[in-house]
Image 1: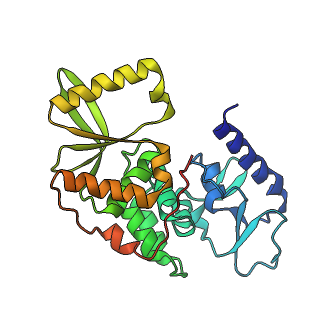
Image 2: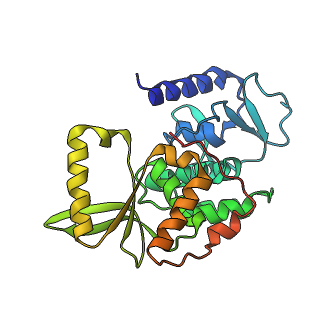
Length: 273
């Protein structure tokens, strides 16, 4: 069993262990709901999260759980099998308010891929009485992109925006030397591609194919920058590199709505699984 499957099993076992403590008004929420929806696991957030109405007489949290005193409207909760959870849209909003932003965007990108209604999520974010982190969640929902194919691609795109890169696109189609290619992230108007390399790209055959792919892309006028998981663990160094890439190519970076919304939000240095 690989480490991700092991962690996933642990998270689901912890959720199952506390199901018996839930009342009819309770539901799993935040990262626990995300896990039940099959979304990426978030390191450091393995404790079950339960949301209970503010008027609930049960004020005690089951041992090993986090209880949120918050009213979840009936239309913002659903059943996954026989388990009560927050809806996909409410789960997304709650995670964006709870998690550091670079982890939250991976959740938002993932929920878009499985059918999250962005407009409904934006509406839910505006109607939750607690205004804390409302602006941050709004900006991240607006920035979410269905084209991100992995959590780490989402994180890379997030850091590109925070570093000042504008008009980012996912899965940009490029035809080069008789072949069709798709780049993880590109900056619109510039032939610069940003690629995240997972471990599967380090087999001998994969390396040969990737080298040939990059040769064709460069021959077609593209500049390719590659990143690995370790790069995401040092945001300051990563942003310096991203700004240097722009200087080397005489590209002027700007300030995005996401940057302005997150100027007081701390980043995290732990990649999401």
